[in-house]
Length: 607
Image 1 (cartoon, rainbow, N blue to C red):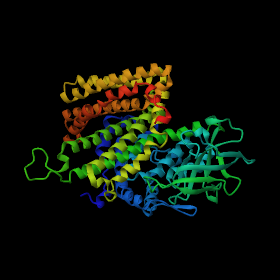
Image 2 (image 1 turned 45 degrees about the vertical axis):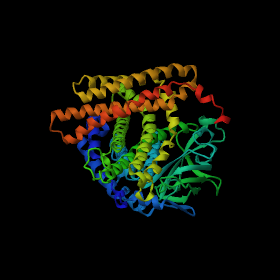
Image 3 (image 1 turned 90 degrees about the vertical axis):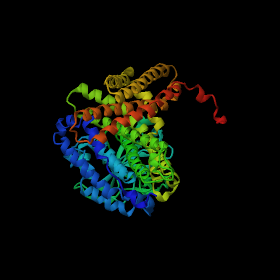
Image 4 (image 1 turned 60 degrees about the horizontal axis):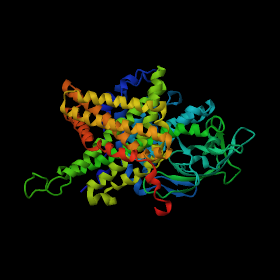
């Protein structure tokens, strides 16, 4: 039986990460871009290894204790689990929060790709803990892009260091996914500040005891604002007002009303915040221009969407590690071919092997997809060639809904399979693996539900350049399939054949959606979710096919830093994905192209 003591064990997948950074994304090329010349692969590897050691030793042990203790509201303050404060102080002291941010604000200046790798490791260690740095990073991105120079100088250095944390305040009781319905008000004062009144819900780490200051980024509506999202402005509302010398002054009128009692991530306080209940309003500072807040907030949201996909990846990796370990220790039944009268490890049973390989292949495909997007964010921001920047930006736009939606689906699926591999013991809270499913389930809802991501894919991303962006991706995948089938290697050729078939189905389905979506948008929306999944599976299969080809090349050349068993497993994992998971693409084509008629044939009363 799996013991509680083992639940704190987490081994950062350093060899898998190193393989991707070297073979699938081009870290060495990134290190030649002007902002990153200090971030050569050897330096990056050192940072990742040290961070992996830190999170496995300091953060990972807080995962189980945090779930058991939870965060507690005491009057006007939230008390996080005892272990969190100690761990967060060490996190800040080590400077981990600022690795990928501008050195001008105290950051390390490493590529965004490196920051995403670190996010994965932190989420594997403890997703609830990782929520505070994740939201702070999103707030930093928004202020870097849209804040005034004064705002940047006042707030960013201590946010980058992690001494202060940040939040994103969008949701209200009547304004969830429909952000344009929000009612929080902002009234301009004679001194140029605004008075903010209203209430926000579902604010992650909206109040806590990890840091002395919280910088809330709040969406609100000025009195003369037009209706809908066009009338929304963005404001900085600090928990404590800040003096000219950067010192903390009097408490602002923003207070926690309650915290939610959640299914998972219980140690991450999800707060209801009230603005201006004790005065004529909390003091707020306008970011940028009035009525441009939704555009500014999308800087945070797009950052957060990739981050939420990384949450799915991080929890999936941790759950898979536990499932693999348990399957290699637990004896149950007798496997085919085993000696009569003996008991076999459950890893020897075909169905358990199927579940483990499904986990392994899905995690590796998702990791490659997320890192590819992160690499292209760096290229989009920093490549000197305008056409390269444009192409990189298009790929980022296309991959964002895939990484967020499929990534969180993978997180839920892998966590669920871990419970299944544990059997009845997985359903018992004492073993701890149920926590993975409880924690990761929210990620399918965060930052635009996965249904909204699918709508974004077919409604905004598919039409880019009249379908040209997807067509370019189809061409890349088809080229890889041709290379694999023509490689002369039986395993690679088999992968290439499956990939080519999937690409054909994606291309045909894409053409149908582009044609029928113009005639009836409901037909387009009806096929959005299955289309997102089929495209994600195909992109995942493409990346694993590239991984297999790279691994085979290293095996043939000899002398790789990766051992032969690791490289051979890359080929076999890609083959499993191609044979067992990629064929689902063809089954998804029918619902993706069925149209909306069947969805509306049954009336609401008949449901």
